[in-house]
Length: 396
Image (cartoon, rainbow, N blue to C red; front, side, top):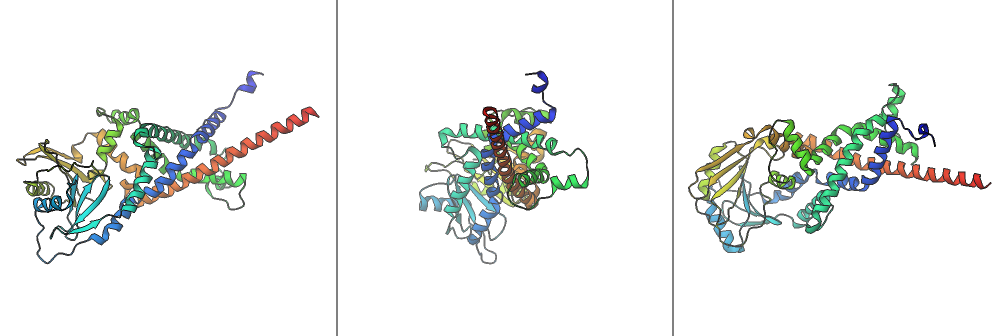
């Protein structure tokens, strides 16, 4: 066989890279896309489900001190929360977080237990998140599951980069533009698959590329460190998984043991945090173990999804003295970009509009996988038919 027959054009090389990456990673990308759609409005859905726990206080009523509320809870429940959250709204309940267990809601004015968040809804989102992060693998197999989802996210980024070079028309005419930008109705056929694959790729490319790039940053240490180096900041110490855990909602802490935890002075520390950030909307307090000398408070000035509206305050658990104050502006450029990457991945960085775009793009990605695999299977079937026809002709 001559060298001319073996050589391929750059576009053919990109095509085979695109086809191979899509065929290998397609099913995992489909799982990530579908679970991504289900997780987009998680925060809003949980808030909507918790609306029944709103409290009604008498005019001029004062919230009970935190020490009294938590002591009463520990006596009744026989356990201590890992973190508590107070919100600035007068009707908002006190939220008690127990890690993997359901969150409890307490009337901050009377100490009455109002109930727990819907366990089935929480379990649903927990299972979907496990699928999205590590394909639902067991705890001991999660590193392998995380490696698979990371590799497929990287493959998806390659697909999104090579895609435009494949559908780029030779001539920019309205007729050619319609073929790659407008969805065509009709029976399921190779032509319709090709049209849908190109049109969905055209409209979803930019948001999906943002989702894929931020997913790669959260999956790989080299990508995470590259982001820091691009900003001139030193890369952080520790694994990417550990950093991702630190960037999640501070209320999602591990379960505390049922041992007694000191509550003395907790109300004073909360008042110190409210004084530090007068425009606060929510303050989450991680309760320390008896061996810890400090207490960390996360202060929110928005309603979630905006890292620039979050700050962390670390105080001495006994004296209340300031140990560390970390507003978003105090972070180096690399840490700021990394925080934005986390919320850009879910669309929350751009509010409800960004979340909706992320949901539509993720839904489009699932159709991209379907049409892409359909085209690949049609191509494989066509090659088999051609090989069979040549074999029949040769025997004849």
